[in-house]
Each structure stands twice: as C-alpha cells, then as structure tokens.
Image (cartoon, one colour):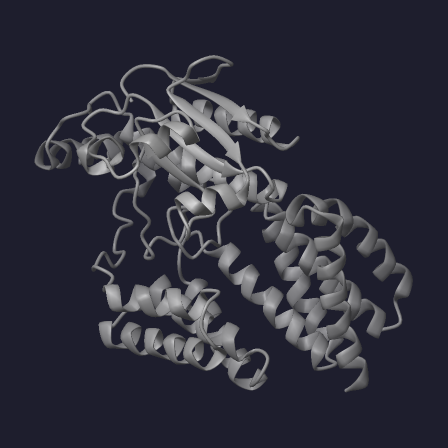
Length: 375
C-alpha cells in the first residue's frame, strides 16, 4: 500500500478477535514501522468472518486466505475467477479482503490474522526454507516473528515504491537492510536453492488429511529421499525427518524417536528454530510417557515449556503441560500434576476453542499415561 493502511472487521467475529487484531496492529506500528490503524468504516484491509464451511466452498484447502480488490465474501464471489482478484495483476494495492473462519479456535483466528494481514501488506508466498517466519507452510510459528517484522519494515522502506522493477528493488535492498539490520552484516549463508514441486507434493500428501496411512508414509519417505538428493542441510531436511517421524509414532516408536531426534539436531543449528525443537520435544515427551519413562518426559517438557510460552503457541503449551502432568502422576507427584492440569485449562480453551475439544485432548494425553502405566 502507498500511504496509511486502515483495518476493519465485519461479520460475526469471535470475542477474542478484536483484542488480538489490536495487538497485531500495535506490533506492526512499533516493530515494522507501518502507518496502520483500526477503523470501523471502509478500510484498505477488511477482515470478514464467515463460517468454516462457507470459506471452504471458496478455498477448499485454506484455513483462511487473502484476496486483492475485494472487501467482502459477496464481493469475492462476484469477482472470483476474474483478473481483478489475481495477485499477479496487482501493481499497487488498494483494497484487500481477508477471510477468517468465525467458528475456529481463538488461537487459529489470531494466527490467521497474523499471517494474512502480513501477506495483505507484504510478501505473498511461503518458503519452506525460512525457519524463523510465519511465511512457511510448516506452521511451526503462530505469530509474526522479529524476522517477519524486519521483512515488512524493509518492504515499506521509503526507498521502495509500488511499480518498481525487480532490478530496481535489488539495487536498493543492500543499503536498506544495512540501515535496518546492521547487526546482520556477514551473517548470510542460508541455502536459497529452489524447492522442487515434487518435494512439496510429497510433504502435502504425507501431512494432509486424505489418503491412507501407507500412502502417507510412502510420501514422507519420498520427501526425505528428495531432500537428501538435493543435498539440503536446512529446515527442509529437518521437516522431512519430522514428517516421517509423525507418521511412525503409532506403529514404530523407535523409528519415530530416531527421526524426531535427527530433525531436532538440524533445527538446533538454525537461527530462530527454537520453537521447532520445542515442538519435537513435546512429541518425544509424549512417547516417553507412553514408554513409561517419566523422568525423560519431564526433561523434554521442561525444556519445551518456556520456549512454547514465549512463542505464544497456547495449544502446544497446554499439550506439553498435560503431558508433563501425566509424567508427574507416574512419579507419584499427584498434587503437582493436578495443579498443572488446572493451569493448562486457560491455555487449552484459547488454543483448542470448545470445551469438547479441550476434553478430547485431555483424554488423548491421559490415554498415553495409562498406556505407560500398563507397560
């Protein structure tokens, strides 16, 4: 956008949405230096809430999405399939619509607001090779990171304007980044090689909802094979190991532990990947509980909890706390376990939404404890 950006909400917004949007706008002003403010009238960015079912009819594979030159679901329906809503035709952003499910959990709504608002204003594409960013389809990060804010601050630097050529932008970027992030000088070295479509397809099949378990495992193994053939040592290789591990948890725990451990080893070497490691440690803590290894589970959980809390992933925080509670019960520390379960409820309600979903996750983790006790 050229000039001030305004944001409004319409539709039946969840109770938490206004506060989360206000917090996001505040961060964008202070951390990205963008002239952005809320409004109740017509806006440059309109966030419309609709049911998940209604949105899936428009974008079957997206939890939430952003469209240029529209300000409502009805507007998008009328223009769908035309050049007006094709981002490739946008030279300067004028009006953008963000569509978010009204019946999602508070955390999912907040995550949608973060990613889609950033994409409404800045880069549109996701890159699997970025570890410290919400602009990555691995979905480890919940809210915009300092790296994301730096990218947006760069995007809105006064040296850049709509309509410039790629060469013109490239010529100005070194000076802009040197001014905005002087401490980053000489710290490059990230693998910027392209990600083959075959790997993306394999990952999407492996972690998607459709297909049988055998086909998904085969896809995960294929993704890992492609990653190794590409010679990657970055987050794409780590995520390949992670995908394999996820699919072997129920049938081959030793294989799952091995793959999770390899993924964590890679993520530990990457800047900004602490939340990735914490997510893996949650998985390893759950396996340890199921294997009747409570001390090991506590070690994993205690390392993960502060990282997850700092990343504001409250669904994951509640999950790790519930796993830790099971480990404490196994050690006979029932009072500590119960206190932790009570504390986890506030995070679980925000992270999972309905009480039914909270109870389902609690039962799922309790079953791991029962399995470990029997073992």
